[in-house]
Length: 206
Image 1 (tube, one colour):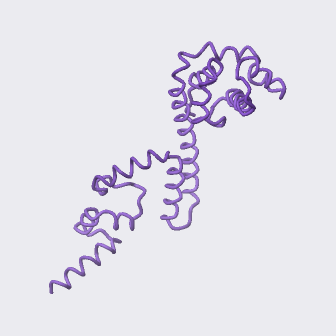
Image 2 (tube, rainbow, N blue to C red):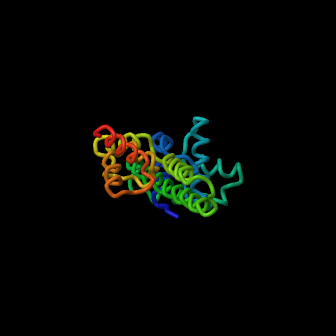
């Protein structure tokens, strides 16, 4: 599965070096986004320390881990201390957050697409419902700012040129005049909207 352990270690190390980095990290990272269990655990304890308005450093993090009996599971004080050694530059923490978030999104996308594939094998309902479910599952992973950019891009161009795969037939008929015209010229079956429009034009001219 996609992951970047160096970026994960650098995030944790950056916080240990400079607690101000926590504000940047907490705005974009949750414990579940870390791939390695030990990193999730360490970050979870950092979050708890921050909520209690305590300093986040080697001593406080190790002490917090010991109090819950999780210090050995993460590799002990030696591993926590090693997190600081692997940080290229603490001020680049925002870049490390982006890397970890993208890897986590790719993992989640793989899971959801795999589930959609499995559902497709056993699906017996209308195909439009299956496509809609798969589309919504994937679309929920897209950040709002990306969705807005995509909407502007699509509205700025003829959407028929993009010809989105997951649009249902009825959506293409409504949104894509050129697409309807191409299907009508080709005599494609099932294009009821284009066919009825053609009949109306013929009737009005006679």
